[in-house]
Length: 207
Length: 93
Image (cartoon, rainbow over the protein chains, first blue to last red):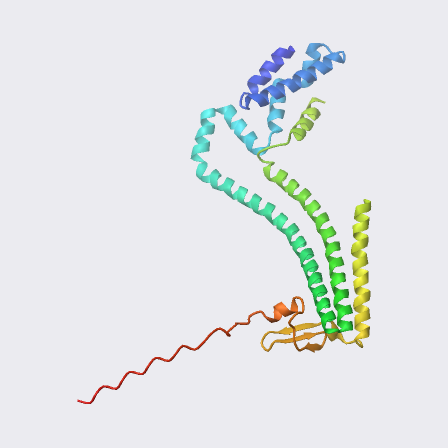
């Protein structure tokens, strides 16, 4: 089989996918074949090393996230079947999709509320410190030395704790930002896969 | 760790340490009286007690003076209206 025949057949088998995705896959395999030919393989050998177009098409579909994969496989059987299933099944999948989105957004908000709470605690310590310092000024007005020292000490101490908690809150926020990004990635994983991940799988397949 | 962060943590730690020392000195100076750490404002009878010492006139104390005035209703401008005139008794038939 020649390279063009392989790519044409692959394009036909992947017709259920969006055109740009088909072109991207074909370009990837065209490059992989060209690389092997540069390494000294003949065109037939390089094409054979890729596997059959059917295997490659199946591997490409398997590489898709769950929802696009199910849509593509259904579309490959029949586009009409896909539309019928989409319309008839809408009372089921639309509420499920809305519920899924609501849960995903709620968890995302909860993650950030956690970070917000840490900042509130830090701010509360700072506020208490300022109030204690004002009480110390009141102590100066009445001339109560031990109270001045105790209040000023508590005020400074609380301000120091607030600064330390601020540093902790900053670190927690950074971790939570990482966690929320991870969660967002996980939440969209049934629908979308990052370009880097897809290339990794394709590279692995080509190897 | 960057030098800015080191300075930040050093300042925070220094404040905590200075606070503990000052509070300790104040506690010792008060004769180990835990009341030195308390601030009481009783809005029912306008009593202000700072560190166990009652303040007669909290006016002018920062924050304490404002807190002591919370909930007070100024009634100085309110005057009792004149009582309405009693109706005249009906004339005997």
